[in-house]
Image (cartoon, helix red, strand yellow):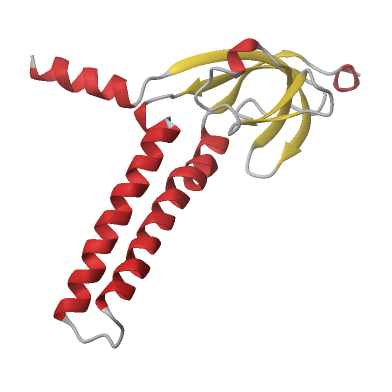
Length: 170
């Protein structure tokens, strides 16, 4: 019973779903990464990683996905890409702003507590506002921008080379 409850909350916070795309490698990047151009699908709009793992291509109907190039595909190769998405509670913007508000309140309390215990040279209210603002901005930075850096390089991977480019066959 206890394991079932743990699994329920784990799935609520971190659900995993895999989307498979086919595309063409358009650029090879350092650190075993490749830029793959795929046709936009309706699945992209509901994806938890939307806006983080892919960018709009030069045309309006394509997306460029940064993927881990495990099978060492080359430019022009037709490949299959798997994208793991997670759209748990922490991916909701409203929850992210609630966390930022809680961090603001904690920072205000901590700043006021420090100023009342130690002689820091500024008023307790000013220190509380400074510490609270730092906590809030820090939490927003971590939740909004830190997660994008992780998502962008970790969720997509090339799993198969479907068709090798004609210039490599010769």
